[in-house]
Image (cartoon, rainbow over all chains, first blue to last red; front, top):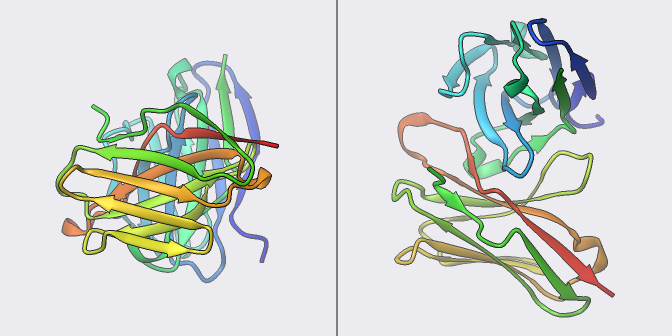
Length: 115
Length: 114
């Protein structure tokens, strides 16, 4: 197992286009998280899945954002009608239990640039 | 409104000495705190955590201290090594309500000088 994988590593898109990112968690981890990190800031929580159920969504997750985790394995994060403010590093993390007990294992992220 | 604050954007420490990274929080509901370390082009890596029922947790060269009355925690690294050069994030969580998202600070860039 090579850890949490995210694809692509980098994405450049024109404003108004839709983008989709993929995250493959560590295979035995039932919890999956999406975070966003902008320059000079710490990661900001977006959403969290336990198996296939999306249990929590941040106010940062506007209507243009949607996340799925079909079958409780990999997850996708889609951003529709991208805006320049969406430019950020999108981080995925997974864990076997609550973050309080286990911390997370983060992937290396997908860097999105909206031009 | 920053609920987790790391007021030092950077810190330079000589190899072999102690590194002390500080973190303050404002939300009284936070009862669990974590430190992450991040190298360039990699995701953050979990380092150490502490529950609010404790005031100290130690793991090898890393010790986290929690002062609940001051809403302050610190990470001590001793002795500091060149490989410790990275950005360190403080994060906090509330165990109530079933929420599982972490609130991160902006990070402190630790530079270990030879």
